[in-house]
Length: 177
Image (cartoon, rainbow, N blue to C red; front, side, top):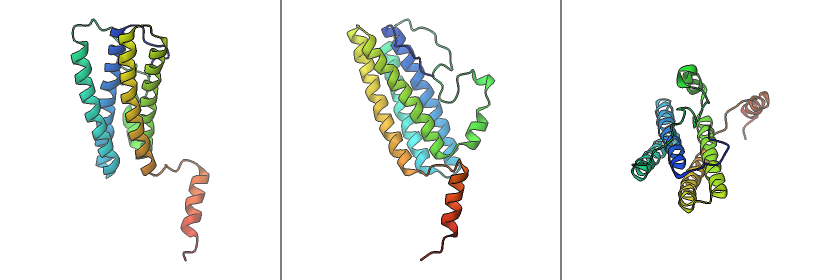
């Protein structure tokens, strides 16, 4: 989960950005694979593209941060799904129950948290280089948010309540004209 406090140094900004992007590569790749296995090719394709964008961002950030002493972060600090070490959580259950809509909502939440972190960092920092980096990262997160929002408009919302099912059954039993 993205930190609630703004980042305090350029090295810290790079460390968090790398953690955020690496998590995005991993989750986007996993979501693409899972959704592809279930024939959800359009949404799987969107996640493949996102994974590629995020992987390129990781490469760029690694080049730019080379030589900087980056602080160590907890591996799950920017997790999309939970805030515990992987050995404590069985993500297979999440994946088993996940619809394309769910996957997009999970990704959208992660991108929005990252955007908010970078926006807080811009607002709180007096360091021009850190503000520039945080603005750049925020812009990229905004692009991903727009892609995910577009993807959400294209997939059906899952049925989650009794009212959802009643509406579906009512529509299915209505006489066709």
